[in-house]
Amino acid sequence: MSSSPASRRGPAPRRGPAPRRGPAPRRPVAERVPASRLDGRAIVLGAIGRLLVVLLAWAITRPAPDPVAQTAHVEGGLPRSVAGWSGGQLANAAIVMQAGRDLGLGERDVRIGVMTAMGESSLRVVDHGDDAGPDSRGLFQQRTGWGAYEVRMDAYGSAVLFYRALARLEGREQLAPTRVAHGVQINLDPDHYARWWDDAGAVVEAIDAADVEVVVVPR
Image (tube, rainbow, N blue to C red; front, side, top):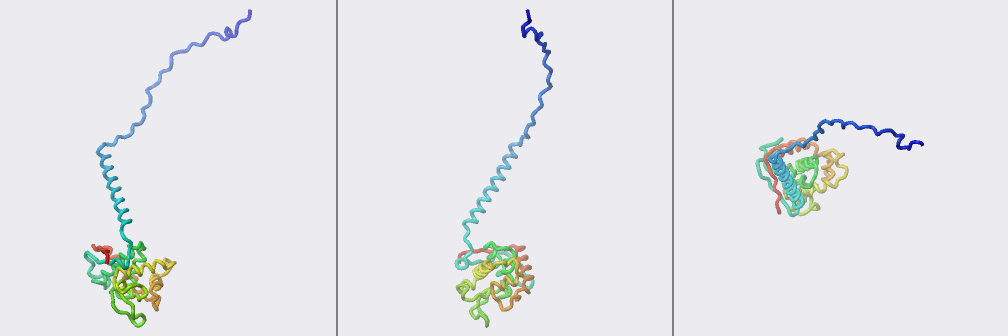
């Protein structure tokens, strides 16, 4: 009689005891940060967040520069003299700088504005013109077509008018500063303003380093 398939398999193998396993590896534990440090970080982040909200609200609600509705004055201590410029001249330069920055223009454009006012009026709000423009007035010697007399005779208002025209000058970044000023003012000599470029740089730097604030207010 033939043996059954089950009988041909032989006895089942004996299983020995299970091998011993070592201790399970420890999982890394995240460093615990003291609650006081967490509180400090939360306070700092909260303060930064509130500051950003305030700055954003200020940027949104602050009125855009308006040469007709706004004027400006200087508070604080201006330098006594910079490259031969002093007193009201430096105050007017500070206002010209503020107008350019209020319009979002770059520092080169701001310096060009100061240079141009130096070349046109020696940084004084003059109430007279010349043979070429008897109706010219103010820091930038702007003629009647630029705007109302009251605006042209106001340092902030006339600077805003100047910078708005400058901003429309295409390719000004590739032009020499004196040619940019000439493109706005159309002076008889396009190189007329070059002699004041270094002075303008010195004045801008000195005013920025001084404890000065230009306050823009409704006219």
